[in-house]
Amino acid sequence: MIRLMIHGLLACAAITLSILPQAYAQPYPNKPITIIVPFGAGGPTDIVARVIAERLTAILGQRVIVENAAGAAGITGSARAARSAPDGYTLLMGPMSTMSFSPTFYPNAPVHTLKDFEPVGIVASAPIVMVGSKNIPGDTLKDFVTSLKKNAKLSNGNAGIGTTSHLACLMLNTRFGVNPAIVPYKSSGAAVQDMLTGTIDYVCDQSTSVMGQVSAGAIKPLAVLAPTASPALPGVPTIAQAGYPGNEMVVWNALFAPKGTPREIITQLNAAITKGIDDPAALERFQKLGAEPPPAAARSPQALAKIHAADVEKWGKVIRDAKIEVQ
Image (cartoon, rainbow, N blue to C red; front, side, top):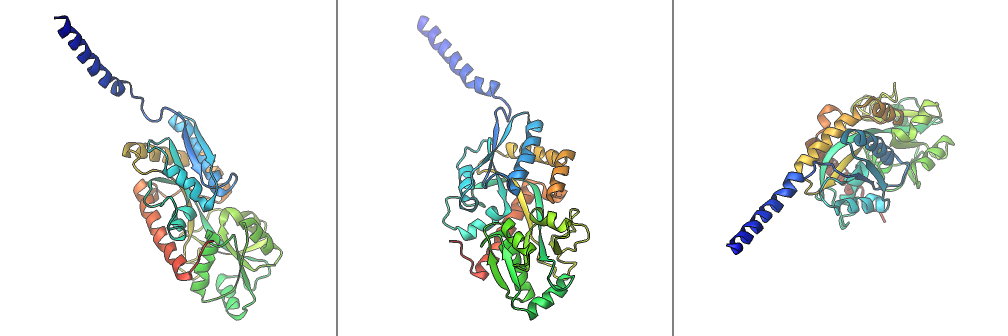
């Protein structure tokens, strides 16, 4: 009888223990969340991450921490995020350049951006703007292209081989049928500074990098590489309005989770992003950066997946056709 009672008590204890984790499991999130930024502090991706981290902290009720893990054109940080537990507590703020260029530039990298992540949602995007020094001939893009075809000495600067700045103007130069002198720099700031002094003639870069100089009248805006005009740059035509449709390039920053993260967590995070980017404080911060939240049709994880895959294919072709190699 005693033996039977002991067996019965043990059986009850086992059942109770099996139920406890389910009964007392805390809903997500129940601890701080980390957003890994694969570049250093202070850049556009880092700033966007900190804006949304502040809003997510308020919405989710848990602290959201931004952690910078720079190196190897974003590969170091993205690989670290991909190796994290797929539980929603480590996310990646993935810039379009790293997420879309690296599968072609770094086919043997320890992370594949299309295969190793679950898309969560785009946080903000900023268009590339083609700008020229105040001394370039012509006031419109078509006038300038005519001059480019006549003057082989005109030069095109960029923020470095393989950057969005490089690929955007490479795409346009091909479309224009011109072959200017290409001058790579170590940063956007250095390229823009030389354009201000007239050392180089034109640059393609994010609106966040050139908006201040455009607003001050120090450089000449030629076109915004976006489907619609930028509110931050009123009066500047889109690339289609300037006469060259089909050459859009909008640089996005989006949240990604490690592959295998539960769908319900992805859905919850996406809803929080949507609420956060519509907050007036966030909208004001983005506007000052020349960035914008995505339109309603581009806010879902499914929309991000399609945009990401399309950009990998589009820019992969540009990279392969131009035979660009990053050392």
